[in-house]
Length: 507
Image (cartoon, rainbow, N blue to C red; front, side, top):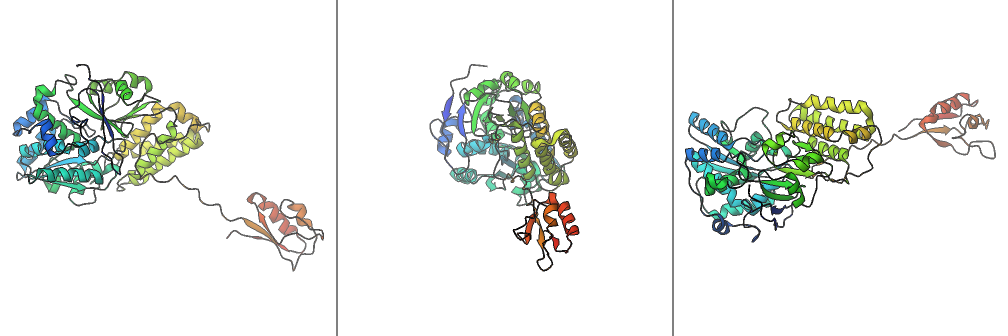
């Protein structure tokens, strides 16, 4: 691998939603041209990248195989295999097909697809149309969850004018599970945008019920680059077994394009960070790397597999030294519980119970509370309508393994003294922490003046409640009675010779 060129900061487009800052380690490909302008319109895009070629089915599959192009949405599934599955589905059906671009990016620690659709939308559309032409798709649908992203894509579609197949962009409900395959196609079909709960392959039945090629935004952008560069040109950067570049989102707001094989520590240094207390890799369904592993890991599938980690959707979250790991984990667990589709027991009941058990343990619940957390994790694994319960349990399990001393200290009531700074980003759907119910109104000890004869025994039995005046009678007719004094107050009621005392219950 050639030595990377100096990094270059790239300006971001201002907007109401969080917008990433951009940079590259080495010469950028996906982000090329953004050092000169904030967004490449159709003219600037063609001037930078040229007109894309047309490929038939066989050529497209061969290109995907020769570049080892894999999905960049999380699973890393080989794109050529996905193409072949869709082509098989087309042959078994009536020949209709569709292409779907997943730009939903419900992961709050990821902004790379947002960056592409805001800054270089035509690169994504090129890849989607290239695939659609090759497989004979009748429609290309782009699903997004941000209004500014929708506006950018709609503008790019208008800049192209009429094209075949037709392009459309749909604004979907923003939630963590929106990007799940069946949830995405359900939303694009006008449905609620929730996972179906059934194992439905989009390659057999996806958009409008036809075989659908569904992949994420960066995958199509990489395809557009590979088609222009050719397999040999695409392989001039990166690793022999993992060619090309990839996009990472660092600390939830910095999007960086890097070649495969660079050290993770170098990426962190570029973004002005170090490994801190550890690095969450791959998003909230990913894995924590220890500071030591983060200093030695390189960004490749094989190298990360040695650490039990994957790149996933390209999220890199170093945890700063000034925040509480246990508190951050509770915060994200609560958010993930709130982000479920609400369709199955493991999500509706299991994930909130897991988050509550974790919060109880971190507040000093002891070993029993930690055992309850592990039991809750086991109860949701493998039982959900989608992978969200499994991923949430994996997130908590990874945190427990990465910060065992922190969780042990918190469970035993010692804590760490650090605040929860929100270093692990969540969206605005985070529910408020549980509110303790208000204390019930206090009971009161009442004196009936028509019966009281000033014997004064009550003041001897409950001296903290009844005080006698100069005349030997109680000073007040109604006195608040703490719960701890109830038994003594009952004794005073029974001992009063005039039967002038009674306890008024809480209203």
